[in-house]
Image (cartoon, rainbow, N blue to C red; front, top):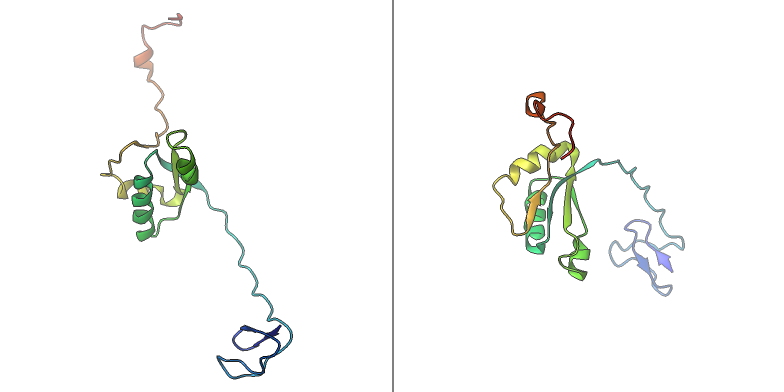
Length: 133
């Protein structure tokens, strides 16, 4: 195989010059560009849904607002609908923006992830004692 060093195009051995830039062809492929280092992204669960239409809508909404996300179990929903929900995970730094963006969204078979449960106050526990039910 021959390669154009200028435009990085691959050609058959019988070709003499590049069709794109008319430059001479070489026998070595161009060096691969170095891969950029991957950054760790901390994801936080935004919601769960059993509805693939909701997933498509939510993905479009998040993409159009440049919110980094992933959907766990999206393909599994196709294989075994209703078994496990798809989990929409967003960049933890963008969680509040995504939550606000989807604030009025009411999908079918969709539930937003629970916030940390508040601990009951001491006043709520007064009079209950330590007796088992």
